[in-house]
Image (cartoon, rainbow, N blue to C red; front, side, top):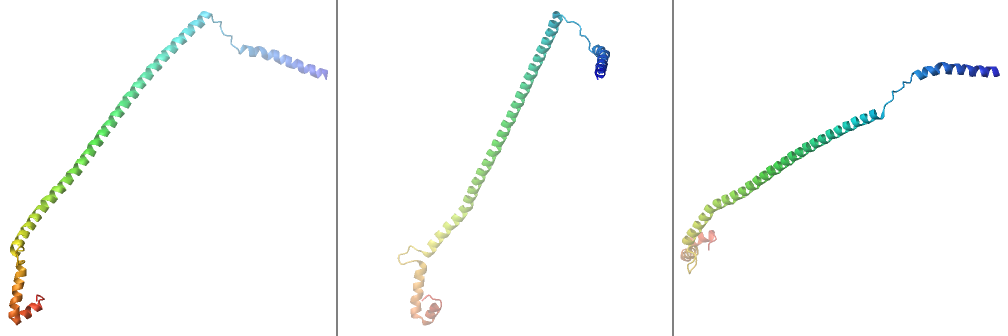
Length: 166
């Protein structure tokens, strides 16, 4: 058993010696960089970062100005829309007021001839019926005269009774 163990150890040892140099060849040895080279590369990186920051800042400024101009354009469009709505609303109110004015004017002009005709008719009726007479109206006086005549003429009295005037 000892021999098997020693054989195994020996085989492992041989494999390690055979493959270890090959695995060491896979690693490339980096050249030595001096402090000066490191500083120079850091300076180049810092300059690149500064340029990148400046580019970012200019991009942000351009974006801000574009957003500001877009917002101003939007505000102008909203103001224009508000002004348009105010004009349309004012026009609608003006049309409504004009319509009411026309209705009032038309009614007045339409009613005026009717009022004038009623006044003429009233004057004519007052003149024809003589309502302000001390003995009563003309119709009442005529009816009284017909009744008196019917008292003297029986045939005429019968006619007035038929008409319910006596």
